[in-house]
Length: 330
Ligand SMILES: Cc1cc2nc3c(=O)[nH]c(=O)nc-3n(C[C@H](O)[C@H](O)[C@H](O)COP(=O)(O)OP(=O)(O)OC[C@H]3O[C@@H](n4cnc5c(N)ncnc54)[C@H](O)[C@@H]3O)c2cc1C
Image 1 (tube, rainbow, N blue to C red):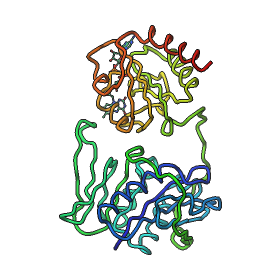
Image 2: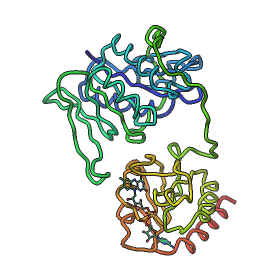
Image 3: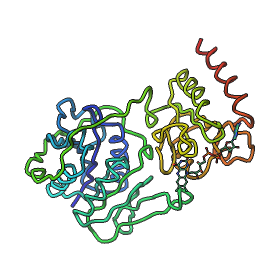
Image 4: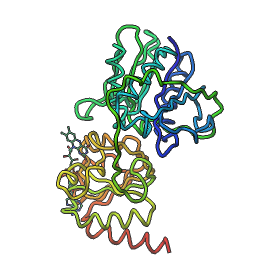
């Protein structure tokens, strides 16, 4: 066994950015001594637009194309798991990495069960334990209040899902080899078929990709103020997020939720409005570079993490701020 197999994801026929984050995690392990190189595998029914240049950092890009792997394999789990299991038999990697996305969080454990090997979910860091030669993973525990480091028992393949945003994605152009892996025989026995995919309509920048996020919490008092957050986000080319309290109240959809049980984001600027900064919310912000907070309670936890803060009523502070941004935007 050797090497690291990264199971990337495909979005609109192209390699999704989260795949580059997984390659970065894999390269960290290579830098620490894992041998055998990094293989990035992606799957879908039509991968014809993908080239090796799309996989910076990977030693080889493995394409698994098959009609049953529609929507990048995210439409069902039988076929992707069978496809990756076949690839595993072929290349025997030491480590397999998935992203902790809707796809990876389900496909990873299924693969681990099928292979009878250990797996760790939701890792925010990976390191080589030089004593054992095995991977040590860091995961948030106790609702994000603490971090724990885990190792894998035995000597089998180690599977981990990595939290999106935990690593910076790769940039530049890939120069590795490109290979096609035939999964026809592997997926022949698949028992479920994806019939249809219904996409939820969304506007503007995706939260996960946004450089600027304006996020609202219970302190906003209702759904109406989110219009002001959207207005500011539009002016700044950013996206709107929310705390779980705001989502649970039905003010915005749960797809807006940031935190332990929501999305992990890594914007340059995260403007939190009426959010207390509970640890479960902050768990989604470990990659945020600058947190700016508006909260009327000067003791709110969010101020411990904020680079800039305004202690005050958002209803007075935010409109003035938005007006200034509008003026500057001209
Ligand atoms: C297992 C588990 C998982 C969880 N996962 C998540 C998660 O993924 N994401 C998440 O967000 N939470 C999560 N939570 C919930 C979390 O613990 C908090 O309850 C939640 O984040 C609180 O949201 P909030 O900050 O909007 O509300 P609150 O904690 O009620 O804070 C509201 C803030 O608004 C301020 N405020 C009020 N009025 C104004 C005003 N006029 N102007 C300015 N400020 C004002 C208040 O001072 C207060 O600080 C989870 C909890 C558990 C147990």
